[in-house]
Image (cartoon, rainbow over all chains, first blue to last red; front, side, top):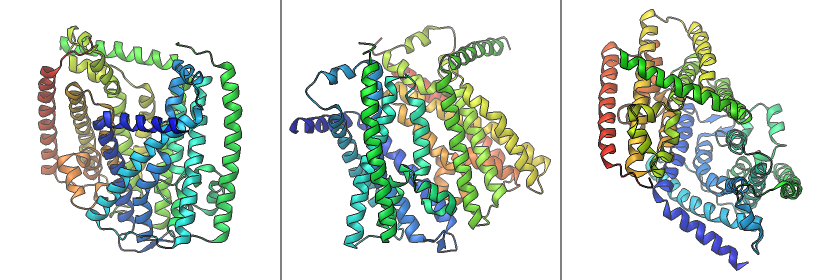
Length: 264
Length: 263
C-alpha cells in the first residue's frame, strides 16, 4: 500500500514543476466563482429571499463551490484515455500494482493541492468581498456533509474513469468529456442550487448521480438535515456507486479484451 | 490590393484544409457541436429561470438581458471561428516548428492567428444572427443609428479580440505558456455573458477599462439601446486601435526573444 503514496508524491511534484500553469488554472477557478457570485449579488439587489434561499445562504453556496470543485471535481483520470490510446497502459498492466488504486492516489494529489489553494482563495474572497458567509457549527450537519463529500468523490471518480475507458473503443475521447463537463457544470449545481428549478424537473434531477456531486453536500452544509432528504440522497448515491462500480468492472474487462497496445 | 488578394487566397486554402479535417473526425465534430449547443441552451434556460422570479437584472428587462447573451455568443463564436489556430500555437513553439512558419513567404502573425478556421463555430453564427434579429424586433424604440452603432461596435469587438489573441501568442513565444492564458482570456470574456452593470466596483471598472470585456461584449448592446453617447463610442474605437498597436508591438518584441528551442 505504501508504494501508492509515491504516486501521490510524484504527482504533487509534477504540479510544482509547472507552477505557472497551476497558478493560471487557479486564476480561472477564482474568475468563474466571481462571475457566479456577482450575478447572484445583482439578482438579490433589494431583496433577501429568492427561490427559498436567503442571500447569505446563496452567497455561501457560491463561495463554497471553489472548495467543492477542488475536492470533488479535480481529477487526473482523463489521462487514462491518453494512456490507452498511446499504448502506455501496457506499462501499468505489467507492473505489480492495481491500476485503479494507482489512479485514485494520482487523484489524491490533485485533490489535495486544489483543495489547499481553494481554502486560501475562499479566505481571500471572504476578506475582500465581505459577504455574509455561513460557518456551519452543527456537528450533525458537519458529519453528514463529510459523508456526502466522500460519496461525491467516489461517484465522480467512477464516472470519470468510465468516461476515460471509451479510449478502448475510440480515439474520440475529448469530445465526450467536453459534453460531460458541460452536463456536470449544470446538473451538479455549479451554477445554481438545483432545487430552484420547477419541481417536476427537480424530481428527475434527484434520480441522477450528478446531483450528489455538488448540490447535495452543499445543501447539507447550509443546514438541510431533514431525515427524508438525507435518506433519499444517500440511498440514490449508494445505488449509483454500486451500479457504476459494477459497470466499471464490466467495461474494464471488455476493454482489455479489445486493447491492442496500439502505438507501442 | 494584390497583397490582400494573396492573403485571402492563403486564408481560403487554410480554411478549406480545416473543413476537410472536420470530415475526417465526423463523430468528434458532431459531439463538440452538440456540446456547444447544449452549453448555450443550458445557460439560456438558467436566464429564463431567473426571470421567472425577477423582472429586471441590473436595470435590464428579459429581452435586453438575452440580447446581451446572444451578442456575447455571436462575438465569442466569430472569434473562435477565426482564431482557433491560437490553441495549437504552443505546439509550434515548444517543438521548434515555428521556424517553418517564419521562413515561409507569408506574414508569421497572419499564419499564427488564422491557420485554422473552426467550421463548428461558423455553423453556429447563422442561428445567433437569427436570434439577435428576433430579439431586436421585440425591443421597442430601436433606432437606425443604434443599429449602425451596434454593428460598428461588434466589428470593434473583433478588433479587440484580435489584439488579445496577438498578446496571448506573443506570451507563448516568450514563456511557452498558452493553454491557460487563452482559457483565462475566455473566462474573463465570459463575464460579458450578462450586462457588465451586474458587477460591482471595482470589478466593473476593471473589466471595462483595464481588460476591456465591457467594451467588447456590453458596449454594442448598450449603443443599440441608446445608452452610450457618441463621444463614448468614438473613444472606444480609439482605445481599440491603441490596444491593437500595443499588441502588434508586443508581438514584434516577442519574436526577438524566440530561441527556436527543440528545432
